[in-house]
Image 1 (cartoon, helix red, strand yellow):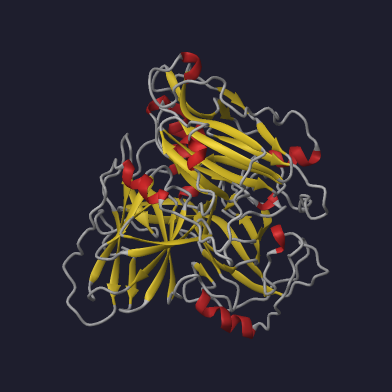
Image 2 (tube, helix red, strand yellow):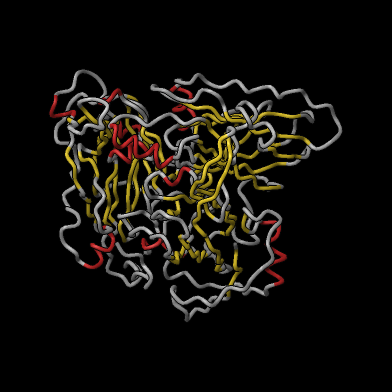
Amino acid sequence: MWYGWVHYQRSQSLYKVSKCSPISKTHNPSFFQPPHMERKTFLAEKVFLLYFLGLIFLGGITPINALVRCCKFEVTRASHTRLCTKKAMLTINGHFPGPTLYARKGDLIILDIVNQADKNITIHWHGVKMPRYPWSDGTDFVTQCPIRPGKSFRQRIILSDEEGTLWWHAHSDWSRNSVYGAIVILPPRKETYPFPKPHAHVPILLGEWWNADVEQVFGKFLAGGGDPDVSDAFMINGQPGDLYPCSIQDTYKLRVEFGKRYLIKLINAVMDNIMFFKIGGHNFTVVGTDGAYTKPIQTDYVAISPGQTIDLLLEANQPPSHYYMAARIYASGGEFVTIPTTAIIEYVGSYTPPPSPLLPSFPDFDNSAASIDFTNQLRSLATNKYPVDVPQNVDRTLFYTLSVNQLPCLKSSCLGTTRLLASVNNVSMVLPRTDILQAYYRGISGVYDSDFPDFPPSSFNYTHGVKAKEQSGSRFGTAVRVLEYNTTVEVVFQGTNLGGGVEHPMHLHGYSFYVVGSGLGNYDRIRDPANYNLFDPPLMENIAVPRNGWTAIRFKANNPGVWYMHCHFERHVSWGMGMVFIVKDGDGPNEKMLPPPSDMPFC
């Protein structure tokens, strides 16, 4: 629940916040402080508008009316039923999906996490940069040790330049399957959107359901050495929809009024799949992704990767009736659930609804062109109010191959003689027993190596042909790449067809990056940079590298700390497709990592 807002004195430190005042509960206990209630609470609590975080935010961009918002997450096991199957699962405050958090650009969220479950947990704030404060990033064994059962941890979620939709989720094992929720970041008070003002914000979270215990699915997956069991359903806002058994009554419904517009806050919380999303009978306008605004794109579908968020402006301009909102998998191979997940848009008014809405027509399951074409349309606004700051020149170029590898498996539990792994530059990430951030900050040796390779061990035709044994294998390691403060960095992700080739939605913690180029086949370091978009590339923190293709990103390493970069397919990150950047402190007083809080969990 929200405790409320507090007055934050300039003299107070980030670690000493006055006790939060209680506020009235909202009409929906699973959602925290929707925007239509903000003004009432603001006046009732007599909250002061403050300028309190400018010194710790990048670039001094904090609005002068930033607020401290306080809430509490209780991690518990709660029973939920889908597809006629009831099971106990990890939840936040008993809800599945978890609460939606509303804030404004530049706010500080103080969140107490109390672990009342029987399993270790961490909570990651996906897309929140946490300027100079990686201690609250929430990545197990990278930036913190997990919160043990019976223990608690106060996270300080520092919002800086993010505006739009982000999300939070568990970042330990596969707990994020049920522990996740939306973050809606509104513009500062009295500021406007770069598009027509919506009448309502509607978080839409795409999720996944297994009838089996997900912890058992995860354990079987690791022991067997192959792919995980396919889930039993996809979901919209925690419900499979009326095309699945035992689901008609609980199908999510969105009531709309003709002539009004709605800002859909779309989040892909699915574990391992890119999804196509459509709304029957309606086009919509893409206006943002990953907490940043984009040039408007008129379309009738989107392709959204795991971890990605997209803001869609929907005009309720069709004849009043019932219409499907639906999502279906995009998959370039393997087994998968073919039934779309559905919700229903119901227009307010007097009319006779159809017996069943018409299901939208989706691109084919394996239509890679539809997925790539959508992503390639994304552009930053590039205006005076929303400028781009893409590095025109780079100090350091990194070339990272993304591969699914095979190693011999001698365990009796393996399904065959080999097991699958995943790697970046043929290094399969192994998480340590002590978190890397603590080891770096306190100078603890033996936890990680600082030798992550800038290039793969050998060059070959990455996307075609037969692979030699030495190219197909990988080595285990806990390796990091150290970056000097303010280094301008280009990372070229090169997909390979090792393991058949597949997309890789790559996510970087602590930063947003500009996607300056992408293509199919092998990256050409002479030809391809000439076609980079350095004028209005999209600002993202999650990008799908195309199957047997490449993507180039750029960012400035101006956020000191320890930051994880990994594939957001859970099976791939579980196999080791990740690495860590350590960004060193700068020389200035506001260019150094802040010290840890006193209640950091221990390993």
